[in-house]
Amino acid sequence: MNTFSYSLLKTCDDNNIQVLRETYPAGLTFVVSDTHGEYDTLKRLMEKIRFDAKKDHVFFTGDYNEGGDPRSLLKLLSRYYAADYSVPGFHLIRGNHERELLPLFPLENLPDIIVIRRKAMNYYIAHAGMLSKVFDLIDRDIRKDNEKTVYAYRLDDSAAAYDAPFRQIIWSRKGLYSQKSKRHAWPSEEKLISSNSCIIHGHTPYCFFFRENGPGYGDRSLFWTNQHIWFSEDLQSFDIDSDVKGRNAYGETYRGLSCICLEALDEIAGCHGGRLSIESFLAGENFVFSAEYTPNRSYVFGGSIDRITNASPDMKTISSSKNKMPVFSASEAQ
Image (cartoon, rainbow, N blue to C red; front, side, top):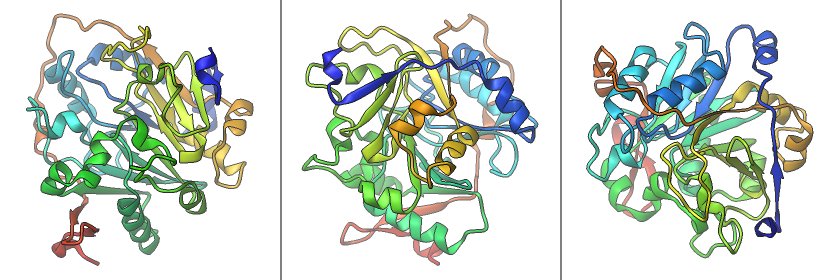
């Protein structure tokens, strides 16, 4: 494994869900990676974490289209969808497959970024990554309004589709993550640490980082070998796309779906001053859960997807100003 000369590998036992249930009886919060129409694999993951629709909040990083059976997946998601973030259930953001590439279901009324405030940290959930200037705008916004626990933001369609920096939030890949890249647009390590912030995203499958010159995602990374996610310490971020779609790169053949439990993660962060590190994860309790790929069955779920296609969650719209700086839309300016 000399590919990982500046990274570490971790094999994790993820059978501690009962302990978490007993520790947090009011319910748990999970972030799930790209589902790509694979509803049976999602059902298996929900069984793994013992999803309780009356107590739990599950946030999805986007990409419900492209692969598998998107319509049946969205029917499953619609059963538990909640536009109100204070209500338990499924909460969705858009991925690149809901915005571009001629999506079957565009899902135009979903946010692109959700921020979850916890005791130790703020968790920024986006499909592919984060632009530093957008991060600054949101950070100032949530500092002014510290009463809520969840904040949602929608990127203006024209800015997200055609303005290159904005587009990185839904399309970032490989070298754009590196703090040393000349094209780097990610929040700095110092900024993320000082604001006690963590970024959680999907989009780039785990298998994409098995290549000859080592991973291009930050400089200090920890890879979960059985759950197929990874953490970059210098980016204070996770990529949780374990590759349920089955993209093959560099001999990696695993297919599965992974998620992170925020209560368990935040407990680790709280024990380390609101900062995440490889060392803390190697010594801490498990907060990552996964389910290997299960082929979809032939039947189609009953029900409608109108709750998602007609969704109207509370969110602010971020646009691009004339000088390419992100701003809130005039009607939503504070």
